[in-house]
Image 1 (tube, one colour):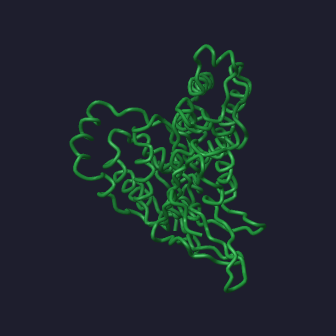
Image 2 (cartoon, helix red, strand yellow):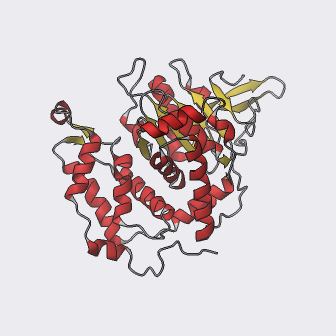
Image 3 (cartoon, one colour):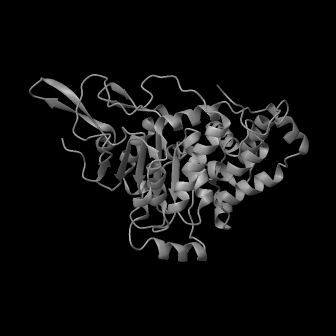
Length: 369
């Protein structure tokens, strides 16, 4: 079976290599070695290299670039939603290019099959055994372009992969590599030929970013610099997959105080009590919110989470998970607006901030050996 023509796989993942049993292509750069967290200067330098590389390609979208890196370091998946032509796929490709790891891209279409994504077992007449041909999901970073143009059945093929980091085909489970991240793009549901993502699928994405149009100066700069060659041609890997794994391990060590946990829960419960919503934030979404807040704190040079870190990522993490009731939707209310109003009703006190910082002697990440 040849790879699907709408799926491209990085050279590190040559198509057509079948295998039997539970053996999978090695997309884990760590090869069983223990990941050691980075020291503060190394973490800062690596994150700055990644963000600087992205910002040379994506003009005027530094906030979106930082949030994309935040999701990667928090071991989440990212959904980029906006109208065509504003740089969704470019951001996804640029993030992937900055890391020396395996990358695959799936162009979702209505006729794309689940097996194109996850893989399929093929009978080998020579060996008289079934061989598993891995799908495009067997990569460290999977770019799913226009995910809401595929059928619900194909969309659901990503569910197990995103949550469990494994694929099950014909009763056999195949582990995916680490790190593993899905970066999916989609057009607004009002666009022709789109299939809305179901709630369960949206909940698998840690954050959703709406790119928006660039400002005037950024758009002029884009016209001046991106005409001759593709901006991606200038991008080279600035970190390895092992570096990213070490950065993730560093984020996992970030301290979260009881006060910040209580604040996070208060935000989630407030969405469930809101009269404007028929579906509030789930417990899983609060776990994702706290993980994103830890990555935000680390990128800001701290080894502890402030309530402000939760606020900074709350809209991106929660807005795509909540559902407005009909009355609120008819008045023009938006999920983003509801999250902002919830945050405004739960003030961050100085005492809460001081408690989050209790016992910390340095504003920088602790040096970990």
